[in-house]
Image 1: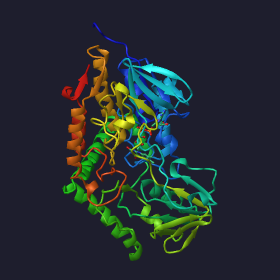
Image 2: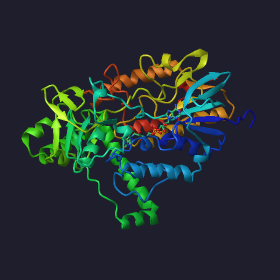
Image 3: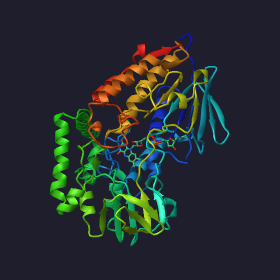
Image 4: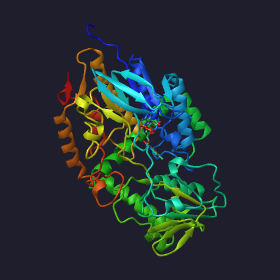
Length: 484
Ligand SMILES: Cc1cc2nc3c(=O)[nH]c(=O)nc-3n(C[C@H](O)[C@H](O)[C@H](O)COP(=O)(O)OP(=O)(O)OC[C@H]3O[C@@H](n4cnc5c(N)ncnc54)[C@H](O)[C@@H]3O)c2cc1C
């Protein structure tokens, strides 16, 4: 094949998406690549988050690579350490570890003379024809702006930076936040602590979902009959596709079903009418990322649990003072306050064609054609980039579909039919116009404040059905790209 090129690739990040990229590059016969990982281990999210109660909220058999099913998941929603071990095992089995440069934070990527120059904090420099950014979405912890936060005399940490040296048994623990993380922590520690205060700014809808353990027999059957495992995954996939339809169409029957299940959960499982009212959200179910928990309502009704709904005034050395003047004395304060979801690969400095920086391209907000490619940043592709699917889907499936799409573009470079590929400005603008329009019909804009919403109050996510995402990822529309 005349013109065929050997490509050198750089993958940034060795979380779920970076491991996937390494495996798939090699599978496609591209062996000349480096994975840069700033930490000393693979696993990303599942390495960083080590809080009590951490588990996935997508069933484990769906939250697995399609090519690496795991017959041994312990639960329907398995705990975080098990997920971390899964990624470590897959990375080892597929010989990814040898290709990772650990402890190498990429600080900049600069496009010059048809190549990317990748620089790391350790002073290492490498050239690459193609860069794949797999730097994560829920990666940079967001800290709340509360007066006096630094003055707290007890232990204080973000949920993604859990300090396991701090004893919880018999302690008075406060948790700020009511998202999935806070809910998981409450259920996990309430019976260990003397007093648990959950500081709630906004009540959340909670979808009931049992989390049974798989029996030894079931696991053995999955091992012996992989077709049963494949069948289970297929059924789970169909169920979640149904759910995805619910969130993108606020008026759909599926949305009504989700709302009904959450309402019944609240009505039938919270006994004290006053507490029930304080736990009742004033917005529609799934407007914020839906909480999935089998036992949160149980936990928050324990005698040592206190749902604090008065707004926080300030933090003092002894604890948290609420606007009603009450001081909630604490030994430990956990900030379950989420992540800076619009950072993506920043603070890395990325300079594309003609000196255009990512900061310029992403002012006022992050954008990418189909979340994957940006004009003026040739041969630079993102996994789990801006405005992609996030709402209660398996991000593994999302990344696998994205990678399959990216590989088709990379194959064009490899075939030597062109040297540079990036989305056109027109394609990106048109995509953004359509995305904004569709976003206005989703449940995410029906009257709540959530991390999905951007500076305009529009959800920074894929606003169509998941089936449409699958379709969009089948094959690049060549008219949307500049091949030069
Ligand atoms: C508490 C929590 C629970 C979650 N539960 C679910 C769930 O149930 N289902 C689901 O689908 N998703 C869930 N997610 C989302 C989860 O982040 C994704 O599923 C998935 O792990 C993302 O993988 P990733 O590789 O894209 O990013 P990450 O896992 O964030 O990995 C990114 C990697 O890139 C590295 N990196 C970043 N910047 C640089 C740099 N400049 N140089 C070098 N390395 C860099 C990081 O160190 C990290 O290892 C959850 C997230 C959190 C925080």
